[in-house]
Image 1: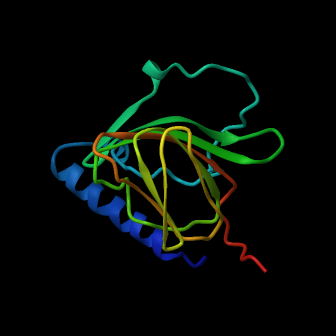
Image 2: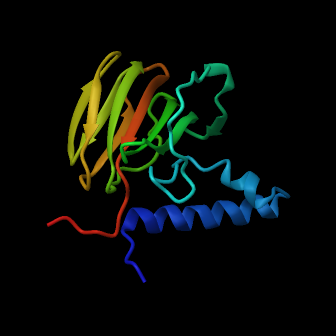
Length: 168
């Protein structure tokens, strides 16, 4: 059996709790999973090869509303050159975080479109507004919080695969 980290355990426990609540409220397990705020890591089983160019109109992106705002999945898959990628757009309410600080194997670029975001850079807070970019490196604690007085909006590009292989 492969060991799991605390983030994976928390995500799994949250998923089971949400699934139990949703099934109790008459939702199917598939509908309950649609309400999860944290997507699986890029390069997960079933991710397709992204080899065809296309456009992703904003109006066509599926919206998942959470207590903290909303998120829209754009695309996920594996490039023909082998890199696993995932892109999503998130809007966060003032004073909220999309989820607690965490770390994972893949890296992420976060591009702020609107508002003022605070990036927890391994315990050091850093701020950026529209046009600013944060980089969350592999296996380093990071988190985001909307520290402005209006909603904040940003895009996340996740690159790399989560893996049981440990860095040397």
